[in-house]
Length: 484
Image (cartoon, rainbow, N blue to C red; front, side, top):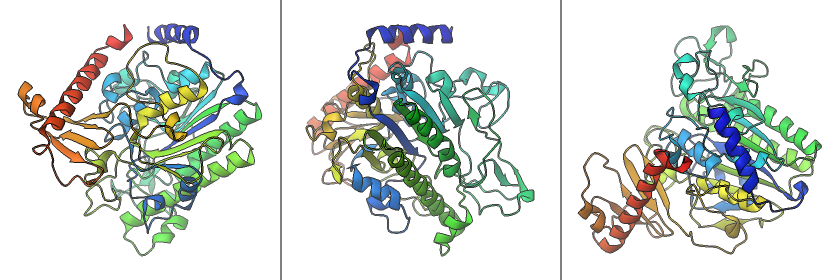
């Protein structure tokens, strides 16, 4: 039923799709790079003075840096789904990590671009469904999670090198036979003292990949992404490459070269910092490959994280910068993440933007750039950023809604409304007056230190009503109304 429905939707989509540029050569290549649990303050271009990220810093200087870029959720899986659907995770049924799966009725960016002749590839962490029905692996793989089987190749990707969920950031298939910590470890020098981590890479044919899996995991991923890009460029086909690094999700492990750069730090920090620098090198390798292939000018490369840093600030090395909160929070530190976009053909080097952008914006932005429209009226939570890239739009036309774990928030161009207590039953009067919510002015108080809800009850009430209306829309989507 799912495969038949997907085929029908694809056929209908192609009938009503509105084609823009006349030639495939006019359409840009697209590379969407995302890290896992990388904090806003974990990169040099946002002021980090310890972690070395020269290639990301160079990318920031060559393109546009978003000062207010948001992950759609405070954890990984929901944010990943927002990238490929343009929709909030509550609409498509992946509210948290290891929950739900990408449904056949959803239209992904890969499916839409394939209709235009794009080659499509996914490389790295998927986390939007299980990848095997038979082998017990990862968090849900095998018979125990068969109802959540939804690999990248079932969602529009031609080429895949994907894991269901996390792996160590060095020697990704291994862990110490004894004494392994959930936070990470120093790299295993004697492989006889190792055990299988039991999360695997899978290709587009549903086969477990067994070769070239040693060393830095970011390099292992890029070893698959770059040949895909080379093959597509060699055939003259535009390409979509989704590169989702595991770095620096726990367990963090760095090889001797990169751990050695931070030898003065303890093991946790040494491996955390080292794996980020190793990942940064692969971003540099990617950008050099695009230049060597002479496709860099008309290739859009984005970079972001899926949420804020793991752990508590007092005992974890990840940095949320000046922002309140971390992963699993809807305060800025949980959802404001590093955000870059490089496109030499259209984006001026050294550009910066205070426009509040979100991972849900990727899909509508790309669709406008390639000249197509969504084939139906299902609600999107993202907006096109093309006018932002061109310097013609400075204010967001619709706010960004957040919902995770009983917490909800709404962000517009200046203010943020947040409710963190999900247990209490709300009254209509609360919404009308903004009671039960906190209101922050992110322009003058980005650290969210001063609650203005009592001082500005009218604004808080208006934003609360907007937030509740948006949540009602998400509930209707979650109930399947968008698919009818």
